[in-house]
Image 1 (cartoon, each protein chain N blue to C red):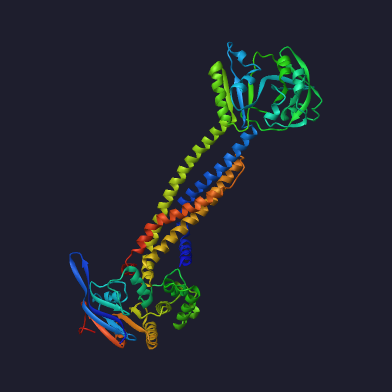
Image 2: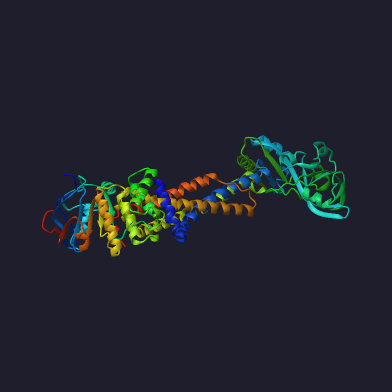
Length: 394
Length: 226
């Protein structure tokens, strides 16, 4: 009986293809949106997490904007004070930076130079492609060495051979010659640093020879394993508030960004979910409408079936099955649509596309439910028809 | 005595606006197994009401009706459907085949409702179609069949459940005389095989060809009890 009902449902669907398709649109769009929400959500959070982690989700950046009264707080010992007063800090690296003019032979560039410590690259998961990073000894000795980002190395040394060569850095009154000891791998820019266009000099070399700053411009803080970067950055802010006041520094962590990003995708998801909900409701009403039309059109058929011995329950079963088959076909079309759209969007914004199986299960479940819910009343109406009246219906 | 139809003082009233129409008024009738009964009467006489009561599509306002020994007066919709399925085989004037289904599937339909297994359904339906001479038209849809062929499919659908009563309502009404006669011949041969047949008609020729005939007028059987 069940399989006959399914067969009948497909027969009546195909006997009126255009009408079937039009009445299914609501379900298709609704399910399509559900699938798109979940698929895009999964793809987006995967991609955002990936890009944030490459920027170092466990790092916090602290930028100094001191006044004349408190700039001496932002010295090289601030790291130790932070580590003593705030829990969960693994490393603190002082960073100063400035724009410099760089010359190699006839090629001249203007880029950012960073004065950093010897463990800057490890904290940032930033890898050396060629040569090496400078050592702690280089820092103490204030040696005139430089490590180049991938892009700047390419533009200064289009033919390669950067490591071992010398370049000149101009600053104010004159220029100094530095030996290139390393070239870095390419790394996507994070929210706080553009790696490939920068060059890196030992911190002490930078302050002594390139720019003598009265304070440390910024600090890169690595959070210890097992501590939440957001909590640690909040604690650092609280500590510095007491020390210098809130307008003399700026604390920023990738983890904060992750929170912002996930709240944005959350808002977006809620919006899409509202669209999905409305289209599923409208789609369901469309199904109810088309089933009522179908029941009215097939009054005669219902009368004949009743005369042949179909009980009210059997008639009800036939029409509910038809509604469920209808909505499930809509659900499958919606899955195809939603997956297709998500795939295109992922291609467009270059997220890695990941299929959400759970969205398919939810969609099939949902469309079955809608078929049952909105098919119930028309089916009941069919079951209650008077056999004599419906037999005589023309 | 094996009575397949027993009506005792049956009345069926309909409320139309403020008045009550007595479609059947204190009618009693008894039909034995194996009889070939014609029910005649002009339109509005109450013969359709009679047919609906015998066919378990309706229940009486008053009186007792037994179909195959079962009192149908107090049965629910579902129970009436069950009796229609097992005991009654309908043949209609306008054939009433299901247009989307082929001849075989049309004949299978009542067996679907009796819960028979797939293989047996098919065999029984094919036998019934063979009996009415349409074995080679099994896969044809109703719109590919002539009027006489459609009525034969309908008859096959009526006999496939081996019912107690084959109930035909103006079975030749939509057919030309020759084809109508062929259909009546088919009923007669089914009667000779032992089937109980009730034909409702307003056509004298058809009515008079029935071995037993009752006439209905104004909700009563002419000549009283039958």
